[in-house]
Image (cartoon, rainbow, N blue to C red; front, side, top):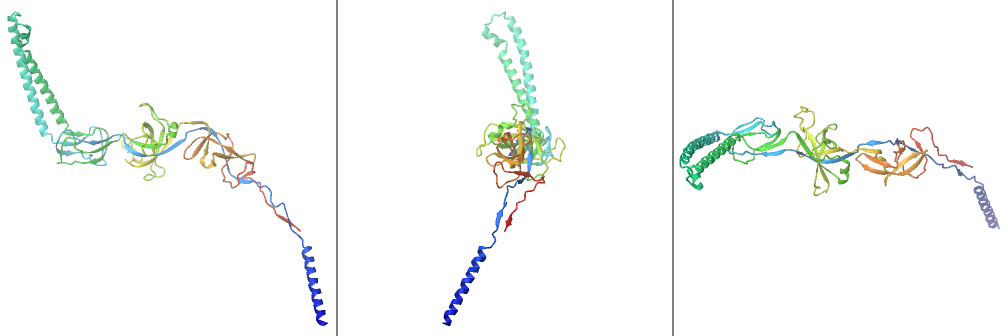
Length: 399
């Protein structure tokens, strides 16, 4: 019977323990969450919209080209006797300046010969005119008894015409010889910068040979490509009247950060670029080397270099200019109105590299949200970064 009592006591102890455990868990205090969250005004930065008139900027890339570019060639042949010290690559020459001299001896002799032939022809003409006077006196003695067809023969009119023709031919030959002599001196056709030289003293040259390359100093062109849709914002002069839109040229590769050149839109090329199908405009840059004005501090333009052009567009009136970073997806703008977020549609008339120009959707003085928000719902509460208001999220527990 002892084992039965032992088993009974064990069962009683187990039942008592289970009852105590149930009692403990059933009477444990429970925590309740109240006021865990409340609406929090999002912290934002804003900028004020200003409506007014602005000049948009059309950016494009272009290639520098000379507006005047020639390969210098002689019109007569011979041996080069003299070269100008300025006629060297990198040199500057003025219009009319002597670049090189071809041996003129043969051409002087030829000119002397042609002048002698001219004097002989003039003498022959004078003699023939004397003979004609004698013939006229003889004709008058015949008392008009000759027929008209014989009259010109008697008066030696054919001989006189022939003598005059010989004189005219001799005059032309003498003038040509004088021109050839003058052409032995090769002069600069315009104010020029020397790109290359292909002749030296002692070189034998013939008419049409390439002596060197010269480009004009007056101005260079930048051939810039722009989209056809941007052409309507660029002022392009018609004919030769006035200048077009102002242009700023920069070369980030070769120039300093603050260095640039000024130019203006000169012409619109009447054909699209073959590969990109973009429009081409000529930007005129006066005095590209700063040589004529003596302003050598300006960065020089290099032929063939790629440059950036910033073209000042025509004025846009009654628009809001807004940084493009503040234009949201699908041309939306976020506006803080009465401390809440309003999402508006923006009617953008034009965008350049930095700004969007808005005709409708923003009013003067609107506070445009510049901060990036993770949760964007129209009507969400907002507060400014410099506001003293604070929103505290509280979580309390009660027993």
